[in-house]
Length: 315
Ligand code: IPE
Ligand code: IPE
Ligand code: MG
Ligand code: MG
Ligand code: MG
Image (tube, rainbow, N blue to C red; front, top):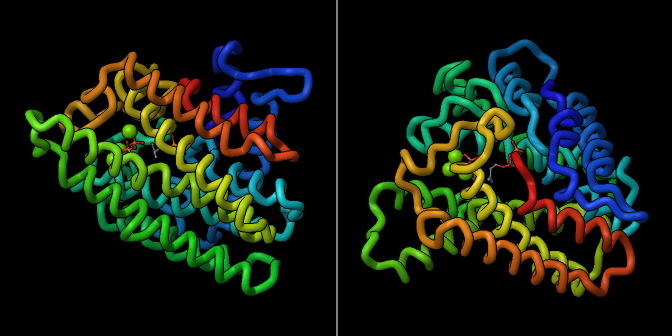
């Protein structure tokens, strides 16, 4: 498994908040380790080619931010991690399926992901498609295993299907791919609307859903869920703005992917707003996100530090 600890320790210190009360680097390393152990536990163990491909992509690395958000959402409302271990893995399964499919020749056509050959490069397209399908299906099986009252599980699955499905992440991915190479560069205001739609759905929806998943399983009240939803929405869009910037400006070795937005003629923040304006927009979204959780009594500093990290990361 790629050493997440080494990569996080390489992050420039000024970008990783360390206060008397909270050390974000330490937090990410500690939580990342917990997630990696759980993933090994909940991935299939058999030797079939699909199971091998599932393990290959999930265990290739990754920042594990979405499962960390599930744990944070649950812990903030008093639920013990032991009760939702499978649900923590579920979001990383869904996220990894989305990456496997995102890299396919019919989509972004990328060869490198998480520092390794993409699934279709390693196993061929049909296995990559099926490994993605298998991860997606298993996601909902894992959420259903949470050791909490059944009504919370139903609410969690309904919410998660909405944000990952045809009106959520898939809608964003569809618009992103359909517009590639075809968007009308003369109608900038229409393009900006499309860009907003793409970023909200392809990326922000799953980040929001991860936070909500932990909180719903913990039985959080509606006003807290609303606050988390606003927070997740804003950090999610900011996260994708940073991804657009990293696609061009990051150290590609550290990033673990080559950056293909320009080759694919994608609508991105960099293309429509330039670097400086994109960075400012992302910063403003983080300010807004922090406002939504300003009343939180528990873990507020963690939410704030993670919000900053969404746009201050190097990979
Ligand atoms: C990449 O997500 C795909 C996007 C939604 C931008 P991450 O940047 O979280 O990828 P990993 O999980 O760390 O590899
Ligand atoms: C991918 O967005 C979003 C999803 C996989 C849902 P990108 O295409 O920008 O992600 P990267 O840059 O390949 O990781
Ligand atoms: Mg893509
Ligand atoms: Mg891509
Ligand atoms: Mg990208």
